[in-house]
Image (cartoon, rainbow, N blue to C red; front, side):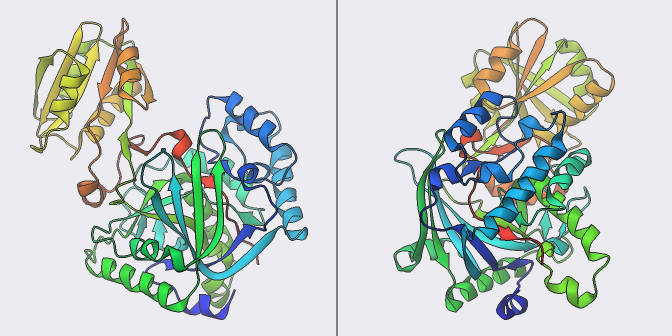
Length: 439
């Protein structure tokens, strides 16, 4: 760990020794989408494997979750660990010490790019428990059962390749955007198209002291405006269970280390991409619900348990639902559809501050009583199509507000699982950069 790295860390944020494939590596085959995408589409990962072949690729360093139930997972894990060691031995990477990396991701033709900053976060500043008030925090409930299989992969890995996206609440655009404005003066690291309709991505090195200091000063300013008793600075966008896995591994490692060793052990940090929630190109999408095998009266019985009262209004279309649930009057609403039509429900005196929380309480109760099953769905039209079949119910959630997102986390501690998504599957982060996590 370099001397400067040891000296500079501001509110959990640090530069890192970042590894990027050397020129000559086919970046289009190197870069692969996050392992937790397309989990019901093995054909997607089969196409990726065909595209990659035996070429150097992050595909050989990750465990696509579509395969988590295979008979001999340890065989794949051993191959992953061996590939990491081999890539290091083959000197496949250039190392950029004590650096940030500025990233621009374009996912739609003619649309503005989404900017991010690759950096290290201190896992000692992260707590994924429900009641956490840490600087780095989960935004949705962490499912503890999802950590052990991921931990089996990371605990002996030589490298990490990040797909984690972390949000900052920077309305004045002081952290990342000043670097984007200077992009012509930065060293270009890579630029490539991404497979399977993933768009394109470009990156630039941020290793000059004054530019890094500008980031730290801006982060410190954001921090100074927070409630000291509940200072949410970094909120998880994507990859919370991967960060939770890194945290769990670090907790295991640090018990055998001295204080001096703990201070700068590489496993104490995790490489993530920081994004500004106020970036206009960052799209937040609610995740909707379809309930199977339930009647409207049974649904309303449970709704009545999570609020003082509710009202419902019959409407004639999904468009009418959208207009009402996304209004700016601060009332808690959600859309409903079944084979008989469309409604909008308004909750009064609800137990949660947002409709997603109230509905999740309803759904959890129904599931516990085995009165229905549920699916979480991207896209309103698909949700409505399923919900209008006999015996089903579609629940349409309102848009997720960027303006109140951080305030909601601070107030409710964590959102219900499957509340929002940062874009569709092909827009998720692709693995490209790496970092050593073993001394």
